[in-house]
Image (tube, rainbow, N blue to C red):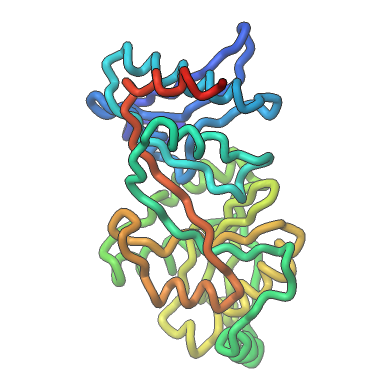
Length: 291
């Protein structure tokens, strides 16, 4: 997280049991509130695999009590989507219920579950893939992010949304240097000219398309069709999940229908990520769970 430490007041927490680290909460402080780190896509309480439910409850209760004593009134927490967990991870969902936490946001992620094959791929995607082959498009993995960032991604975001990528070129290059096997760039070329690309963040079980962008003639060329056909069915065919990410806007209240339709046309279906608001003074509610 150091690459954007100047943007946040870090207040990450470590939870110990008998001097052994058993849980962490990446977080930043904003006035008298604490947030699951706003510089991270996914968050929540991350626990040691050996922790059983009672230990998770005790860890969370201790954490809330600590924050309450510090004068931090509210904890905003974003849960880790289940596909990213290395073990069952719904313990804190139950704790949210006991704590009377407010569900402040719910995003929908479009995910291909490779345990269920074959996926239902739309005829549009099949026709696009055929057009891409006819146009001689080629997919390549590229360790250099500059061509995609400067030629495709930045101009498209500027023109379509008047915004910039969350990561600057320098930041994504820095992250790639730290995690060269986990952050990967795939580009599509026509006659050696880049026409599309995606930046993939890879975990043990998931390949996540962090950025997706293509030139204006993507429909005519089928550039994104051949790209994701290659990634889903060849490069990441052994992953449990392929995650296209969210299609939400306005803090989860709206969905970009066209974007969602496009992701689902590859066979992706919906899972959710929840965001909660917790009053830290309610830590005492966890005292009477066990009978």
